[in-house]
Length: 280
Image (cartoon, rainbow, N blue to C red; front, top):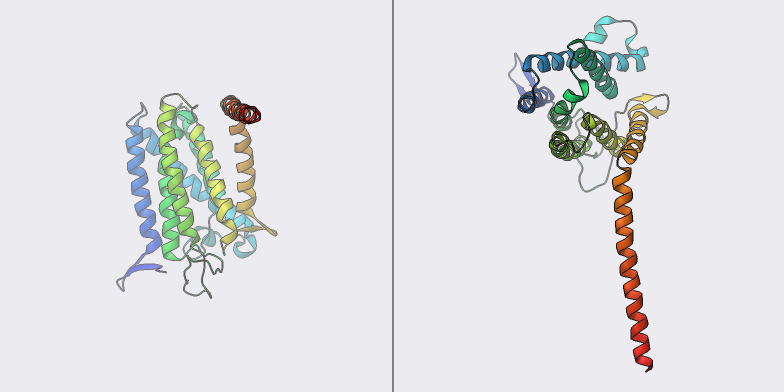
């Protein structure tokens, strides 16, 4: 892969950093477009965004250091120097950022559920660029495979899964669905805050699907921490969706079941009628 995109001698431009910058600007642009559809003040939204980004970094890093305490200890420099000692907990960053945003909206007397739906599609974009960037830079290493789609990473033996690319494509699908749902929320067909639950559900699904083919997973004991948390989130929100859509689901099953029953019944009558005619 290509960890360094451009080496000018006195300065190095890293591939992953370029993708992060691109993701950040595209996410900011989409957020700005989304906010123009609302009555929120832009300064309030972007103040909350930057504070929540700081909270995401702090809590994501804190959880990662806690889970790898033997490698970090109480060394503050190791905590701050992410380039030298890389690692951030995915869910620590997400829930940390959401916590800071929630506290911020309360302090400004804004409705958290009103605002969060407009932040989800930009968040999806940031994750898409992050995942694809991690693939091209060689940060997301897949396990060994003989599958048709495979690649060889520098410093690793054998051919590996394109796990970062897989996750990026999956999240693009999530982005398109989320953008459609946003306008359904504006039409009041879903409740406010629905997109946050969809984002967590879809991210958990993506993590579960591809966690097993990642080489550098974060473990808690003998368990993959991201897989365990994702499974809890996926099951919890799935039960919530089933309850929320229960009327529509039961109505669909009832109507579809009636159609099947009528089709089978008509087909049976035709067979019986055809048999009688043959006898006479």
